Length: 409
Length: 150
Image (cartoon, rainbow over all chains, first blue to last red; front, side, top):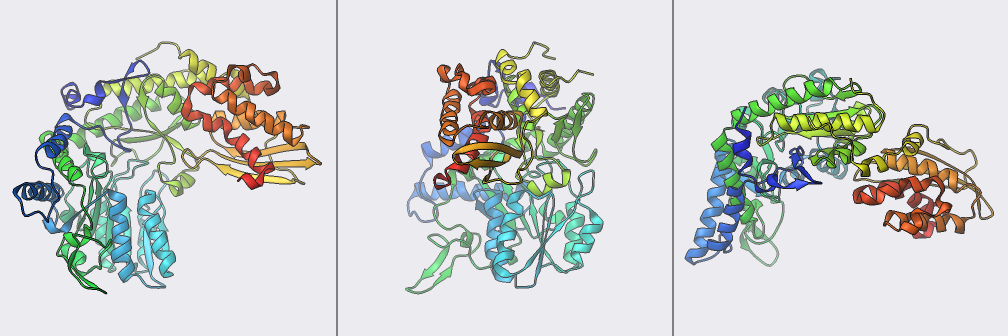
């Protein structure tokens, strides 16, 4: 396990009290808290380096551009990108996937084509494909999940028989914590000629990610889920694919020459970064990556898996609690229900003890339908959580049970 | 492990009466001859209600609902369907206003006998994010009888 007390000291917000209790922050799949190093990097950028990037002829603007491009290199190295110009900064995973659907998808998908998604995809890796399919007259095929919350590989095989143009899936499920066999899924999809889009929102913060080993084609990530600022994120892609794609947004920065009635476009990655970018976000994300590298991705993954295992064990001892998702190959996300206590009621009760969890459909309504629940409660861990947080969660759940007339086992 | 007793605000929120309506909702189901029906959901938390009314003249003769959601929204719906039976539409809308006032912490409304069992929900006003749960069925009722407002 990591030295949680030492790590927590780096996160000013975690020292706060909520409703008179020490804050127990267990909603890391939604967003994460920020270490002082990230806050400092953002302030330092504005205090010393701020200017618009890629256009100033003066030294300050050159330093701003260097900071922005250094952040790109940091992201590229962190996920082992194919090349730095294959890293396009976006507002997050959602915008990255919309970019792929809106630029690559719109240029390549035709009426009658099939696209494949899974029943455990977040709405951000589903709705953009729905919109594209509706626009093009293409078919969206949703791959089923098994009872224990994995992608059903035989159904995946059947879906691939339709020779889809694009196959999209999450590396890690935000609602169940399932770690999908992403490299295997990508290999099978490539074998039928599909382009593979991986939603990396929940994997990048928590696992050692190597997009070249995964051998996907597009990989989307969010900065705010990995200690970085909100509104930061990236699309990591094979440069040759980006190169062949039409642009996504038009505007400044993404052009080479502009005539009255048409334009030529900038080189990668700038072709996909119209307008003044979120430099603060990129710089903050780079600082977050430096912090994560200091701890070590493998150690973070081990720590979270230990916390999830402990939480599952504790929750299973509470009569009436159901934990969803697989028993192994899972990340630090624990989705559960407790008897007939609605997850929102659980969240309200836990909040009174300063415990923050998510309650709801987790932007995965097709998945909730398959689990046959309207919503679940979800505790999700990160490097600053410890076994004391698991204790607090279990203790508060017993209290919730008592309020609803459940007798502690 | 923290074994202190539950917070008094929580005990007030999850009273026996509320849990009883949650677990044994009154008037749950559909009406054969509904004159008004409306479906509302709260996309943020997923609470859902389908409310049906049978109105004769301007009197609500029957109200039934189907719903899914938290104890607060479902108990509020159950209590509301009992309370508005045989009330005129203006009376029902006045009750919706009183309910709204109680959710804003109006102590007069919280003591108003006209709200009947719904007064058990007064504690919701201490939990701002849950107020929309308690008001969901009332918003459905208002939409149903005043469709021009929807």
